[in-house]
Image 1 (spheres, helix red, strand yellow):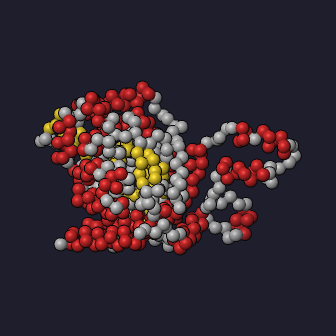
Image 2 (image 1 turned 60 degrees about the vertical axis):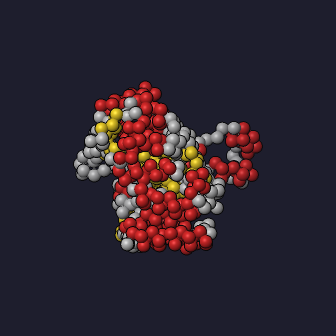
Image 3 (image 1 turned 90 degrees about the horizontal axis):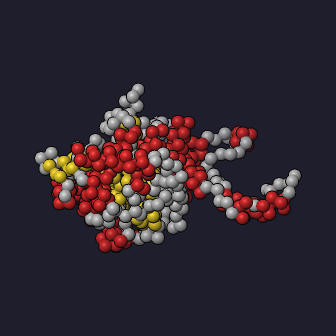
Length: 485
């Protein structure tokens, strides 16, 4: 199952003109020239220095000339492929193809009994199984943080839970060289060798620059290691307008552009041609509460502009859509999630993080919302497919054949075409009120809870080879013992 992947295409929505994109680029070049960027990883700073950047080793700052910026960014591929545990599952990032990922690393979850609590490894396995089932979810992030295993080996348990319970691609972990290497070694066991892992990347790395204008030591050292093995890396700042970036949205785009491009340069200088994504997780500060507004409309604007900037530099893109600041499954959660996913999808974001499962600004994951948001992504995918206009779909013969005062319901043409043309919900309720009340007046949340329980009971992910699973289990046990010593 899941071998035939639906990759809808977006990109119909733009908000920046070519001249405005040029101005953002020009402002970015000026920031690099006047301020530079702090690079806290000595290995990365050395890469910049060797390439010709103006480096101040006392302040750990690199000032980057435009010529070096343009030359280095060109080394990054315009598109690349990632492969699942079974390499027959393949995603192609680039162009205007859109892919949806689960919410990334909430600190707590809301379970099927309504309890908000810390997560366990069993939760990680359950969530991976649900995401494996959901046809509109392409990729599994680290969906929560299990607290029933030592902190030093949480990264291995998270990656292994995803790989063991789903055929799909997964996040890796690049926070520091040691842990990055451990996830690489685990993935190499799955692939059969490190060489095969290089050929068919399995792990997606995530590096969030430290705003304003810094690249952290551990994440960048991990990114350099991931570049060695050509595992794709996302650079996605989490700038908060008015707090860690300028209050103006255009100003945030300039700062984001500098932070992203500096990170991408590190990957390219470490290993030219390493696959990367131009990313954003930017939002605004709610001036009334001091909270971040991840469900706000500005996030959608950042997504559209960032997708345009990614294409401007010839890079695949990563956005965030599906976030909500609501704490419960209510109208706020629905409206913010749907708006965010739709905006990012119409923008042609190649990889949409947090598309499914987010509550509370992605600090909480909801079991039920993972399933509900899969349906939202399905609806948006149908919107991206658009309206096909050809001799068959124009249906002139059908209109004339049926004629006036008749129905198209029983027509063979209807039976042949409706599944291709219409979105068929599996969870959303379209019945009449009378039928709905007769059947128990079940809410969407309750229906999602019932469906989620059914998935966990009935869905069987494609099994992993027993000898490979035993080797990974032994590897995790050995690494755990090494940390305890």
